[in-house]
Amino acid sequence: MAKSTRSRVVLVTRCFVVRKKKILVMQRAKNDTYLPGKSECPGGKLDPEQTLTNAFVREMLEETGLYVNLVTSHTLIHDEIVTKGKHKRLAYLVFFSVGVIQAGTLHRNDEHDAAKFVNYNKLLKLDLTYESELAATLLKKQICDTMRS
Image (cartoon, rainbow, N blue to C red; front, side, top):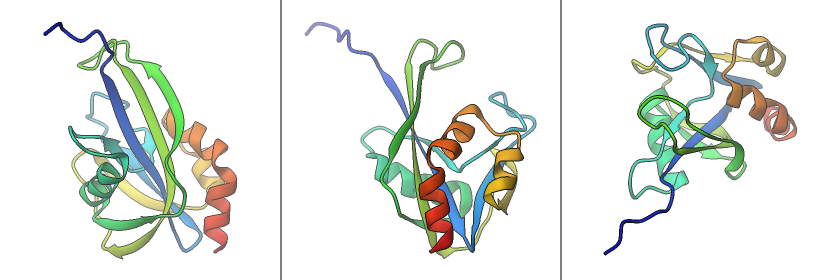
């Protein structure tokens, strides 16, 4: 069998988690090698044989301890070719959604130094990762509509 020439892809799912008119934001650990100290929406990479929805549920539990219901579908926000690190030369696709908390108690894992809820205007003033900042702008209507409901 010939070796596949298809690109391998890194797929990421992230979510604007809304609670009481505020959005959950996580601050990456300052000792992390990838974007240390930056703020972002919770989420992460898909594992083999996972759908975006399966990965979404797993990542929300791992990173936040929360069960989150999707309010919007996953929307492709950002894509690039990775230029360094273990995923170098792979396509990197990031999907965002908006969700609300169904159950659970908020905690953070070792990847993050802090987790907090902020209003939309405060979110935009944080030192966000590029993809979270872009998504906050592109999904503003969906985020704000969810905050009002």
